[in-house]
Image (tube, rainbow, N blue to C red; front, side, top):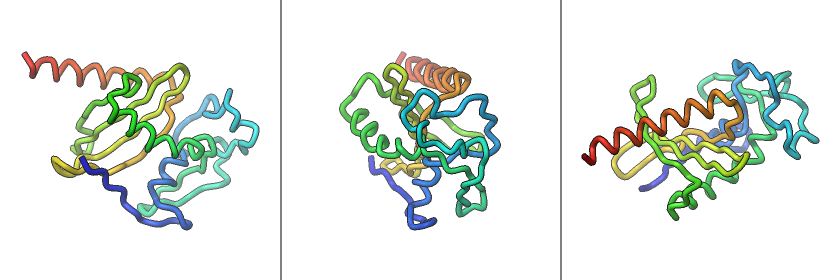
Length: 159
């Protein structure tokens, strides 16, 4: 399957980089994502203050996040692990609220939890939408539920 990465530019970087390296200001953080991570030593707590922002091409404003930015390089590695059938990478599909078919790769190992989201464009092509570390317990549970539901559906189809 071919992965399409749209190259719309913002501040000399691809928009997908900024989406993966920032956080929505509407997210209510009760703990900083970088807590217990080396990046916390350099964190300006921008995810809370929102003083350093990036405006996306659709007009949405997001807070820059060093913790997320340092993990953008994981995208390629997680895809490679998935292609090698690594058990630490889960795959599932789900139709989102806008009726778009989304494909998910989730890498989990000990405290590491990273999600990559694609949108299916055709049988042979997907578009990279975003990627980010999962740090909310509620989000971890929601993604696990989505994965389990997908597995159940696949098992039903096989029978």
